[in-house]
Length: 378
Image (cartoon, rainbow, N blue to C red; front, top):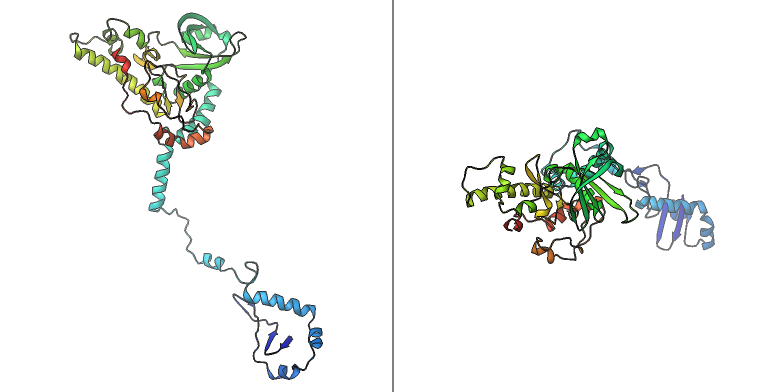
């Protein structure tokens, strides 16, 4: 034991085997002095004698006991860990506990993931269905196609009716080829998405590829099944419209005299088919942005009108072809709000981030629930 005496106070340090659950080794404060110490150390002892009595071992021992005594040190070194003791007293259960906040959180998460245009279906379509489709779908090249009659020409490409050079594929029927010089890659993406999500809304897409050309640069070749060569614009040019469409979509002529009631039934059928086709596109996050008679074709096989030409479409699920400062429209049929759309809307982020945030973007840029198509009035 070491004792340091000064005027008016004495601190004694002693090693002891007694410890507490929280303070480790005890720090012993001795006051007043016992009789033996009071006799052995007096104020007459020279300072040099006191200093010489303090050895390095005594100093180290003093500092150690001082820190241990006040509980300073690494966790679980100066005291037993109370959290371990506390956890051991908790009831243990291997069953799943269902709480009201947990149910609300789970339902909110599921509703967000499946909200239009669909975060969860978007990831499934992009990373699973698209990959599997590439493995099993047939592929085509330029040599597999023989050009035929020219069906039309637009600002971004020329359309032909073509046949397949392979005899084994001749039974599948003719195809429609579009040689696109611009927005071809976008249109391939949109048609592949539509084929997986809502095939009945648009023409039956087969395949698309890029073909190198030395004269005009690279071209994108897009192939569809040939379903007919009559667009709604062609049918509307007839003086018999809408009666010339009646047998095509209703399979028979109505037993009604020509007049407003009969015309309304025909036009309502056309509108119903177009609105269902648009609803299919919107349900998967695609906004066409260029609906007009020239982009609506009559399918002879299904007796329905289908939408074509997705080069101007925007995929709001992943942000493809979504460019806020660029507008693709036909002034004859574009809605008035397309001319005053804000250019401050941020551009789309990367595809995974855009997919995760697509419900928010959809609510901001939501297509009108009531679609007024003015071209039917001529």
